[in-house]
Image (cartoon, rainbow, N blue to C red; front, side):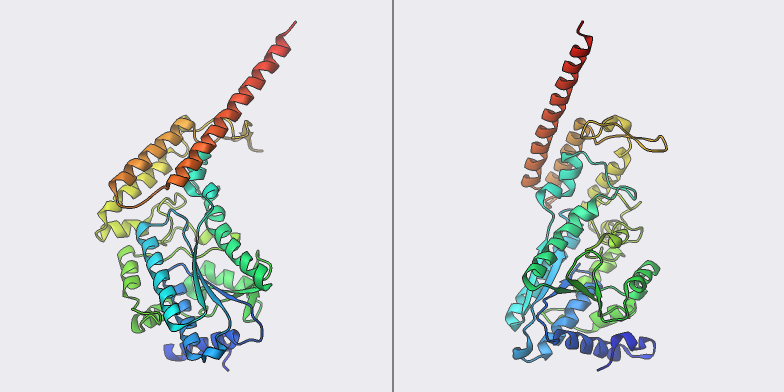
Length: 387
């Protein structure tokens, strides 16, 4: 068969390129081992194309050869842009129903952060300042950990897994450098952080035009077409925030591009994709843009930050810079009140009852700990002053 890594797509037609890619997918699927496949599915164009091509390959195989399980895994940070998570949930349902009807060994899953690690529990419950480029605490807790936990559970069952990603060399100069850095010259590359996980990037040499041309000309093998996805991109003028399974991928989450991602993302200067949705007619989400901008504006307000960290210490860097502690209790209550007010005005759940309960539990623990520290300090003062 043709080898994708040795094939020059520059002089090939799209039909030829897809034939080569599907042949490589088929060859890898039929390898004499039982490692399950995990497709990192963000709901965007690239991961949709990977899922589409894998479906094509499975449908072309006789039933007796469809032995390897394929897991299509999405991640919901619980603060995804409302239109994006709606699209992901709908497309995952379509894929699941299509795989069942076609009797394909495909399983679908949406991973989510533990309640103790959600955006609101950390920001409002623990008082973490809004994420920025130097303190990006969100990606690991909300993206990496949930998806990695799912992959690790498959590794425990099968010893190894193969992770299929819709990574493309031409996506950006940063992506090209990343592809080159981790390319070992073989079809499969070992994952940097997950032992027992091998990474397969079947569409790495395709261009953006290739991806859109194929999706525009071919109906989804699980049923329907890709017109809703195309409209989603057209409305937002953006791109999906990728499935992230290692910290080295974190810069692509919260970058300056117009990627789809968390509506609460304060790492970017502006949320261009959500702005695009608002400009395309979804005016009800304008309040989310305003709220996100307000979170940015209060981040470094000294009146809204405690002097000490959660453990009671004061932080001064080696250069003598004072680093304030978490948001004050009053600031956290204000954030929660504003969030609930917005939630009451739109037909979207922004924060769950479980998160609110966890926030109140953390507040209670923190207030108790602070009272205990103050009591201890008072006792120490009395002892020192005692004649």
